[in-house]
Length: 234
Image 1 (cartoon, one colour):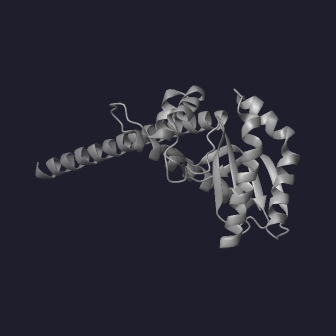
Image 2 (cartoon, rainbow, N blue to C red; image 1 turned 135 degrees about the horizontal axis):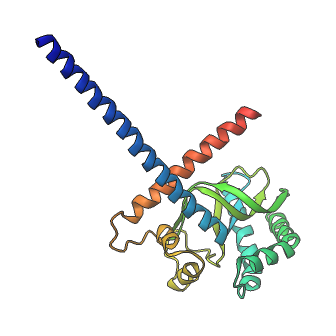
Image 3 (cartoon, rainbow, N blue to C red; image 1 turned 135 degrees about the vertical axis):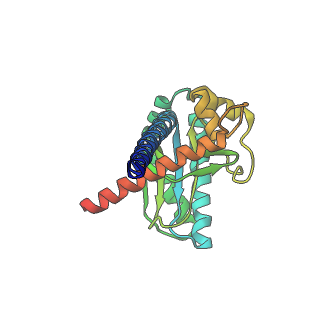
């Protein structure tokens, strides 16, 4: 009788353990799926509604970083008035395309004035970017459309802002993006996307900073797997 009890107890415990494992895997799967769906929705929405502007320095030397800033200033001085009345990402994209040669010329002339002859590459298209902060706005890791100006070897630190909607302010690195500009951003993003990049809480069950980390974690994981796959194929 005791042996039967032991066998019964053992089978019961084994069944409970197996059931717990199955439930655990099921719950984990649901969480991962929800994380993926939320992250993809946010990142896709952001990428579809903004054009970023990046200027990448030749190197991290003090001189090259100074040249990068001068190139940035010269391009923004030219492009800001042209983009001021653009009310759609399509218009902004076309203005950039129409002025791409001018942008390259401005960059080259600015570099030459500094006594250097670095080549310049100007491109507009999708690119992968890590999490970046601009004033008090943060964009999570992901693929975004960007006007990218690469100087020389382009191995130095880069400066970035958002060209559409127009959020490019030279002195905002450690400051705060004006409320008027945030309103422009709010107009093109969903409420959830806007809360993610501004990290503003509205009495929610899940804090916005946690949601931001979910998006950041999933995009970094996805892009690392993609990078590994590409390297493996090469």
